Length: 357
Ligand code: IPM
Ligand code: MN
Image 1 (tube, rainbow, N blue to C red):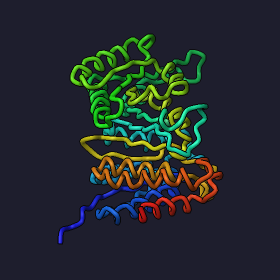
Image 2 (cartoon, helix red, strand yellow):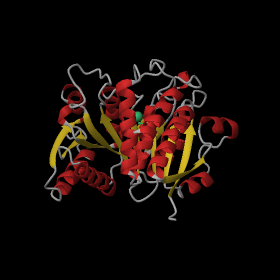
Image 3 (cartoon, helix red, strand yellow):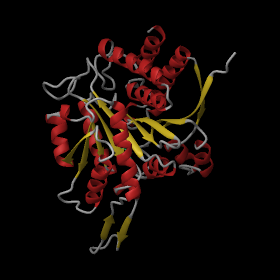
Image 4 (cartoon, protein in one colour):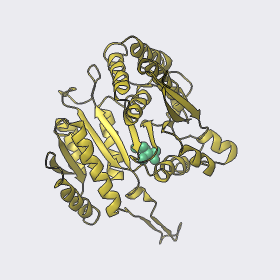
C-alpha cells in the first residue's frame, strides 16, 4: 500500500475570533482530505495577545525557527484590545511576513453568485480580480524615526523602501500569476507615478522591462486613487493588479467590501520558495469573540488558498464549490450575527457539502 501524502501545517489561531474561524477551516480541511486522500498533520502555536499579556513574548525565536519547518501556516487573526496597537501587528504578523520572506500578499476579490455587493448594477461577472500586493517593503519596512519627540520641533519620518530586487520579484510573480490565471491576461500596475516620482519610477521601469518577456499579457497602469474609483465604477476592468505594500493594503479593504465584506475575504502571504501563510483578512473582531456569530468563510477560503498553493488544486476547488453553495443557498448575509446560522453551523455546512459533493 502506498503511503498517503502528508502535509505538515502550523496553525496559529491567534486572537479574538481567530480560534473560532480557524476551527471551521480545519473542519473543511479534514473533510476534503478524506475526499482527496491526503493527510494533514497540524501543530497549534499559542501566539497572539493572550500569550503576550501572560508572558511578554510576541514571537519567540524558537517558534519562528519551528515554523520554518512546515509546509504552510494557517493563521486566524492577530490583534487584542488590551495590547497597544502596533505591538502584535508589527511584532507578530509583519515579523512573520518579513522573517519568512513572504514577499507576496495575494488577495482575490471575487463576488460569488448570491452574495450582495454594495455596487449597484454589478454582479459576479464584473467582480473577479486578484491583487498582488508587495509584502516585505515600501512603507512597511520600518525605515524612519522620530526626532525631538514631544517638542514643538518634532519630526516624524516614515520612508518607503523599494529595492530593485523586491520590486522585480513581485512584478515577475504578478506576470506569472496572471498567465496561470489565464482569464483576461491583463496586468494593471497600480501606483502614483505623478507624485511618488522615485518609488514608482522604479516600479514603472521594472514593470515595462519585465513585460517584454510576457508578450501574451496585456499591461495597463492606474494611479492608486483612480484604481479606487475604477474598483467601484468599473471593477470588470481588472484581472490582476500589482502594487506596493501600502496601496495594496488599502485597495484590498475596498476589494473586500465589493466582494461582500470581511466575512469572505482571504489572503495568502506567499514565499514561492519557502513557507507561506494563509489568513482571513478581517482581523480579530473582539466584539464578536466567543459568540459563535462570526462568519468563518474567509478562514475557510484561506484554507482553500493554502491547498491551492500546496498543489492540491482539486481539493481547493471542492472547498470553493462548498463555499459557493453555502453563500448561494444557506446564509442570509455574510455579516457577523446576521448569517441566520452560527459560526459552527456554517462550518458544518461547508464540511457536509465537501463530503457529499
Ligand atoms: C492586513 C492588515 C495588516 C496590514 C495589519 C494588521 C498590520 O491590515 O493584513 O491587511 O496592514 O498589512
Ligand atoms: Mn489591511
